[in-house]
Length: 145
Image (tube, rainbow, N blue to C red):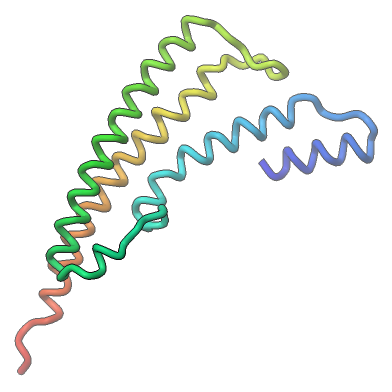
């Protein structure tokens, strides 16, 4: 994406003739990047959250509340995955193509269900990691000899 933007700037300002497809390609790559990185945000807990209530709960209460939130997020992500699938079906029927590159627009829009599908897998992984932390902590707190 950075190379494409550099190519666009170089050809426009140095050569005086812009590459017409590079801006469109970098925009579509950016869209793919956004949707594919949603799941990473779940595993690294980088999404915006309000944790004032969670921080005041005991550790088990924190885990239960987080698990509940993960289940809600999982339901939302599955809903978006399904809606994205329906959108792709419609886009395939329209036969719309991009302006400069002439690629089918469903290729751009398929980033939505693919990204949310990966996000759902990451939520399952995050949920498992939540309870494995508890097992690791209980092993570390073993009997003191």
